[in-house]
Image 1: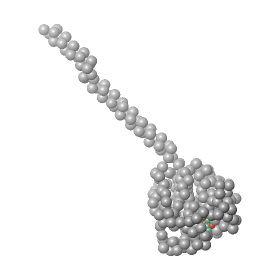
Image 2 (image 1 turned 30 degrees about the vertical axis):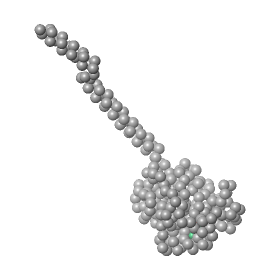
Image 3 (image 1 turned 90 degrees about the vertical axis):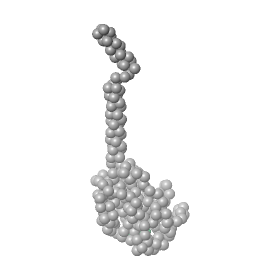
Image 4 (image 1 turned 45 degrees about the horizontal axis):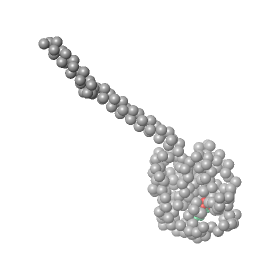
Length: 236
Ligand SMILES: Cc1cc2nc3c(=O)[nH]c(=O)nc-3n(C[C@H](O)[C@H](O)[C@H](O)COP(=O)(O)O)c2cc1C
């Protein structure tokens, strides 16, 4: 009888193994391995993301020519307008030239800050409008926005000094972006005022960012400043 019971028990064990029952331990450990692998993948994914975002640079710029209400005629005399640069790719603004060199030097993403409401193509009318906008503290709506600001560690900002201040669309840019924990390097183009107080203004707008001076370049000297602009980044 005892032998019969033992045999029956042994048979039962064999059947249970064949049907997977009682294999829960091994199934559980397989699940655990899968979960662990998933977790590991996720962690590796995070690290990879971190590695790709590490040191990623956004080069944001505002320039008059990209914000005017009509194109400039072909062959416009760039030498009589310190705000325009005639290049093989057409006419460019001073801040745009500087931003493009910086993006090339850093491998950063270029972003043009563009106001929905355009400025007159006429320089003096722009000067007048900018003064009125500044007094009224306008914050013009922008035509496009930076995707996923989190991916950037450093922001290089290039703009023309307007009435010893930031152009109003640059204020709008600061209003819509959070630069906390990022480094902001400031480049200004001007006709004598250099940065004015723009660097401290940006520090006030972005108290949780580290704001440093990059370089200020006189508009009339932009075309011969490429090397100096590129070199200025090496110290940063
Ligand atoms: C509306 C306006 C206001 C300006 N105000 C100043 C100023 O206060 N100080 C200064 O040095 N240059 C001033 N400028 C000159 C520009 O900063 C300079 O021409 C700059 O290089 C233009 O850059 P952009 O071609 O990228 O627009 C002003 C220009 C404009 C259009």
